[in-house]
Image (cartoon, helix red, strand yellow):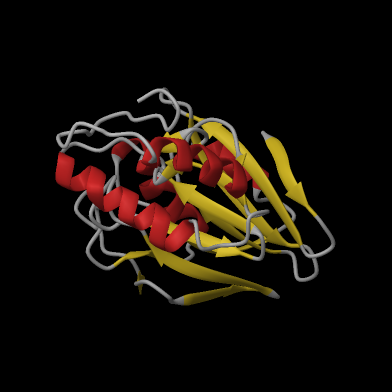
Length: 213
């Protein structure tokens, strides 16, 4: 459990949980003490303990892969706060979300404004959540490359999502992914430029790294 961002307005805490080392993030409005949980990988009791001294308002879901929702049913039952997810990304959920999100939607957490980015590719309905210069990216982008894709069409789609929705953000945007460490947008743009300048197999997909693929 690590505080990865903190200023006068916001605190973002990362919790690496479960057998796949999946990141959950607790975002807190420091003025109002309202909090949101982004993804629910595992170990619900740890998450609930970390939410103490805040007022949980939402669970936000980047996508519904099992390593991101392992604790979701328990957390929904115990926290009794609405789940917000893409309207079509509900296949693994035991019950539908209370809030259906789409690209460009806004979610307010105290004084903090989240903008919803629809970034298909890793899954058809993956979401990223942006507040200020912070982006919670789920499995859409990681340090050094995009999220894993299962077909060439999915890879083309995730590249479109990354370049059209994420690379247009300010260069100093801090990116907090669904696994591993954070990164800075300018670094990813610079590495992608190297990738884009080289020819690639038209059937490329899977785990791709900007500098070594």
